[in-house]
Length: 158
Image (cartoon, rainbow, N blue to C red; front, side, top):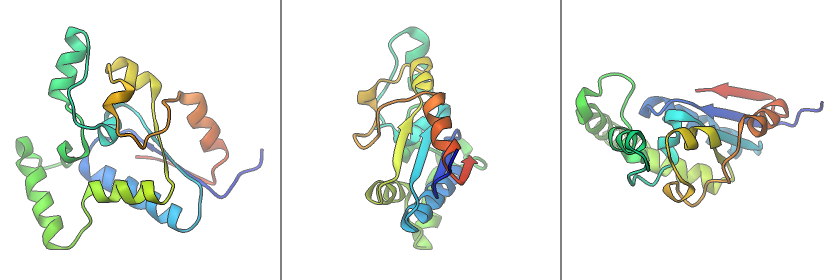
């Protein structure tokens, strides 16, 4: 199997710092002309959600309420302090001229990074396509993600 010069990033975490690293790597790869794919699974899907409530059944609605998506709702992996940490980190990023997550995501999109939502995670968490930002690709399974990864020179799990 011949590998291209691309990068596949599996975004499992929905933590601000890890998502920031994933988007920075994706932007760097895409800016260098590499085919770049980001596969969002479980908590990582929060990053590509619009932020609206999700879920149909009781558990799905509870999950949608307790784990509400949207890139501006995700907090740091440490020191979140019930949401205060998210606010604090955003202020610190702003004071140091660090690009906000929403802009990083848009830059990745503008550079042609493919955003691939995990079909199984969406089913389990009762997230529909209309709950995701418009720029994502169709949902796909692990076979599609693995095909992308097998053809990439670098595959990262974040």
